[in-house]
Length: 97
Picture 1 (spheres, one colour):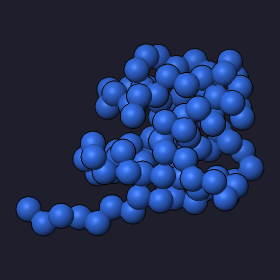
Picture 2 (tube, helix red, strand yellow; picture 1 turned 60 degrees about the vertical axis):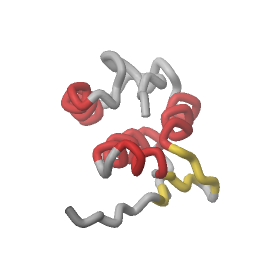
Picture 3 (cartoon, one colour; picture 1 turned 180 degrees about the horizontal axis):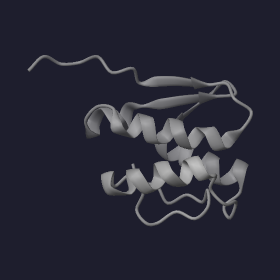
């Protein structure tokens, strides 16, 4: 099977850090485990690995901030893909990469 080129760096230019959760979920479903470890997200000129993105979401949005309806749906759907270790109720860091 031919190897696929997977883009490993994404630039986030938004101001609403909740949108980083979409980036985190999308990056996790692309590529195999080794490729997922190589994914990086550029936020405000600084590169973060996916674990760093999870921490940034907690820090910038707030650990206890409730999920939006859309993010709640994505997290519940992704829960079975095992990016999320346990049920999410807020933007606190419980993602495992």
